[in-house]
Length: 80
View (cartoon, rainbow, N blue to C red):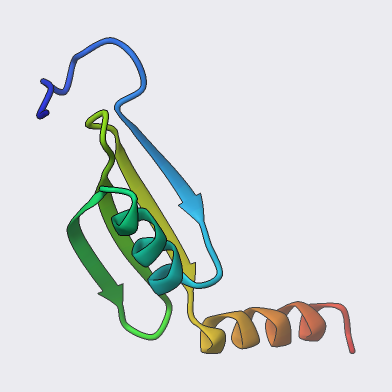
């Protein structure tokens, strides 16, 4: 069900998840359709899924390397 962009109501929503593959697999098992994936270098990954009601669910997951770099940066700014 592809609704026009200006349709009233919630048409898309985004969640941050730890294991994007596991979430995609669970959603597909319930009838959701994977409509796209993106990988941004070693930083994060996105997946776009269309649910049964036509709502697009975007999932975002940071890589372990990106989390480690962010943690090290936070510690460095605190003088640790």
